[in-house]
Length: 411
Ligand code: NIG
Ligand code: FE
Image (cartoon, rainbow, N blue to C red; front, side, top):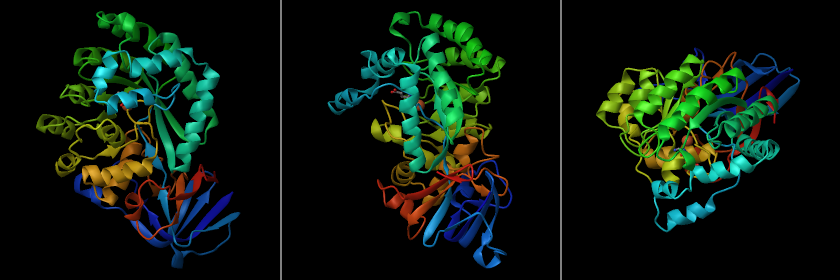
């Protein structure tokens, strides 16, 4: 089955030679081919180039993309999109002035979602999450990482991860699962947090590994949540079972989360509101992808991660949605482009790199996703008629995606 997309106004993020990520000053470069074609064979990108070099127009399907841009699908490397119920009550508490930590203290926040998730059936969770996946496909996402972490008991964590496995089996999105047993401390473990950490290590991790339910292990390593020492113990235990670390770090403080993530060669460290010289130095000497979650910082009105400093220091930066019911109830990666530009002063080109190739790296997918390259997975979207690349972040709030292709098929 061959598909030809022709007359593309501009084909964005093309690579003749595949890169695994883009760092520093290179992030402002984005290869694009104007007046281009793209050929898909099966589920794979077969070829692309300039219209004048297109040899023959035979294909099973021909799509005319006149006036339209083609982008590689977004890779959303950090979400919590399996959850039960929404949390707009806490949103109102926040508007009235309570902080994220104060809400958590009162048993709200993650514990609130955990209570609801424990009561929800696997089927309900699956149906709700599937609907969210459909929603983000419509906004241009082609690969997504999904975390557990609203279970907080062994049974509920396994239930969540089984839901993610079913999503993997039935959704056209490429999905990676991240085991986040240590997302919050259940009320019954207050004051004996280390026993909860023992439960994660001795009971949850072996079960997750036995059923092969996750690729990654995450910990919310931050002030008021899990300490560096606890994170260290859990990552060490997870790695013994083949889980690759990819953690929440430095959202609420200079917590040491980045350092412990790097120590265990984490694929990514995410949030990063609190990053100073030491953290940048540490990241520079690593293979770990610094990942910013602009939706959460916006929605919680938090300080913004110093993205420009990181890029100036030569680091790569990835960005993801953090789609979850508490701190970022949106999985719209087009909005992330806008936040990247407005709040973090990234150029649109840097923002595209952060949400495609670099975020693919942050979920272990940059070999196959995140750019238009021969042999990569044919996950891309065709925009509505738009004038320029810059228009994508500029015309914010509207969906600029018109057609989506996943695994070479129109969705
Ligand atoms: O990434 N920071 C930790 N966890 C989530 C929030 C989850 C929630 O509030 O439900 C986050 O923002
Ligand atoms: Fe998160």
